[in-house]
Amino acid sequence: MDPLSLAASIITVASLAASTCSAISELRSLCKCLPGRIHAIGNEVADLEVVLSQVATLVKERSNLLGSQQTINSIPHLLIEARLKLNQLASIVERFTAASSEYKIPVLKAGIWLKEQGRLQTLQEDIPTVKSSLNILLGASNLQDMVKIRLDIQEMSSITTRSSIQST
Image 1: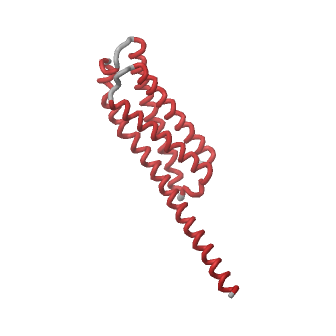
Image 2: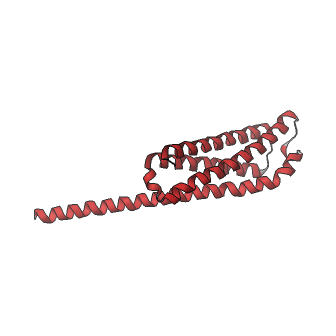
């Protein structure tokens, strides 16, 4: 996958994360009392959005620092997984919002809440896993960047030392 289309895919998933965060905020404004799990998963989605934005920037600006082809090939898989999890979460939040706004039933009292507990818990565990995997890619890229900087400094030092020796 070329860097431009990969970056576009990442931005698409980041936009989905942003819209999911907005939906959670809307639900929060409708319901005065939301379960802590929804707040926690909202925070995870917001963090995922930030990580996705960083990975998109990395792909657009410095795709050569992503390392091996295996690393680059793992990104689309992670994007598919993130999109799937975010779509599942968005549909759950949409049902909560519908129950809260149309039927004026608090989320905690809605039967949907009890029915979705297991899926929410799974999503709460899976979203940080995807985020962590993308974060590892960012860390590896930054490490490669630091190694390149160090090598550049060593090369400059070597050139300066040779130049100094030659001038004396």
